[in-house]
Image (tube, rainbow, N blue to C red; front, side):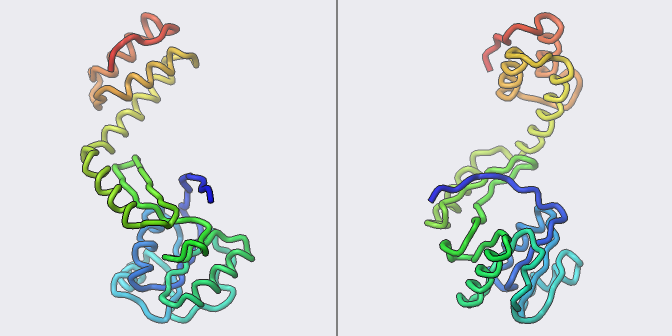
Length: 215
């Protein structure tokens, strides 16, 4: 099996989670972090899920799963402790063309929830295709330890500088080289930042030549 890696925009998209216990909590949190609209259906609810419902973060229906519950959803998650229910959710979702994940049951998944390292807008996702979530979690911890805590702030400033470069430079190899060089240098917010000085000097003096500076 070959997986296709991608990052989905879930803002305001309807998602359904069947289950509201320990297995479901992290999935609900992940969907909410992506600003999805989350409907949760379960006869029993954990304290954390109840808190999210009471604060208006999710829509909660305290009842068992019924056929038809995934209709109209963009994606669905089956996260109960009953394999028969999870597979019924999978079957309904497959028939309706809804992406579905049955937690801890890889053959009944269209997608997997990866282990994630996040620094602001920087997102690193790790998947083992369901073979070893424990390995994915270990790798996440190792990568997390390597990344400085301010990497997200640095990325924001790098993005701002990139937009400045796109306004100054024509579309050519020199611009490509410049952007790759700047991604290896410190970028800061203030106007006299060394990287911004490099970018402006390059655009002013030799905009069509590759930037010859060691990162």
